[in-house]
Image (tube, rainbow, N blue to C red; front, side, top):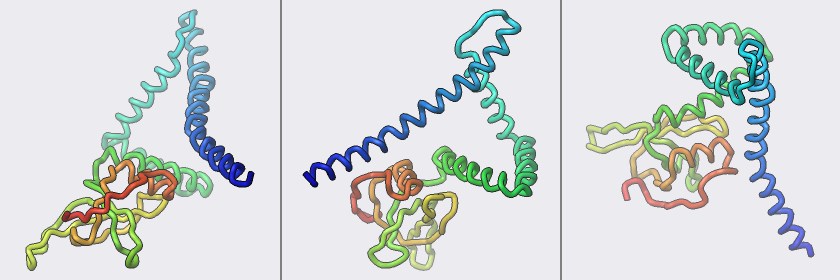
Length: 203
């Protein structure tokens, strides 16, 4: 009976974890429909006299597209920097904005393609492996040896971390994708690959 209850408890918990992303997606869609699509549709209806389903969402996407264009040019970046300098002076809003910015920077990392591959590094102490991202390589002319530049992110905020220079033989190639390793870092190990290939980078 005890084993049965433990079995049920484990799979009920896994079921909750599986439902959370679906529930968050449903809440997001409901928010977009009720507070954006509906409001914008009512505003447009006053001028054209009839309803167009989904027009609010279309307007939202167009607005986000325009904001993306503005934020990508020099003028937009200067405006954002000026806006950030104002928010930095407001205690509570400053903290909220910084958290949002960290999440945004994290999500944009794969897009920037700054990481070449994932490696495991025996860095802090022997036998304790940490996740690292190879950002490039340099040559040790004295020994004619290739060295890797490895960024070791902090958990759960991969926008900060350590940069180390290592021999390829000092790393293990787990055969993970950048996305898989990033999910593991952000989730603190809750989400991620279940297997390690265990090959050294030179193998």
